[in-house]
Image 1 (cartoon, rainbow, N blue to C red):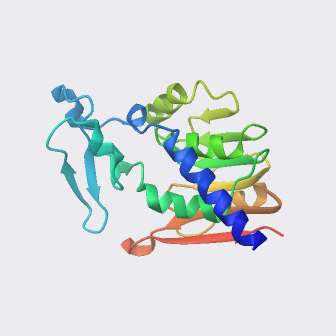
Image 2 (image 1 turned 60 degrees about the vertical axis):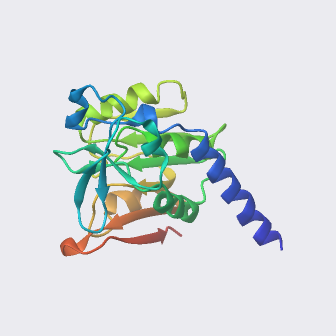
Length: 206
């Protein structure tokens, strides 16, 4: 029963963290935003890899369980909320832990991680696309325990941490990630081998 209560408590905290982070400030760089549709998004059909534009600029489209494009040209998106909920629940972030977020985009799920590790933890976010990294830095500027680095999270050095959340394509865990994990640390990444539908993997550092 205690184990079930712990799972219920974490799930409640995860939902609270997502609810506390509005999606609209993290809307990205979609090309059609130049058409004066400041809230309009390009929504990616995950299975067929097609881009669908929203019919209006209603921000309510952002609050559905959909993948939202951050950059159409680069095929970068901010991910489907329910899939991220599964990944984050696998990691089970705790207050006081240090988390690395690889592939932060504009920082939305970095903000969720920050709330899950607050108040005593810290989050270090890595984003290789300079324009997205600049947006993430601005979006997360009010969170003192979050630092955004405009560089690849697949190259060293990386600081020691309790958990790593990878939102960048990888075919296998990188040694640099394993080396950064403290004893008992965990990481979660999504791989897309040979164009197949992505799968999730978790590893534990003993």
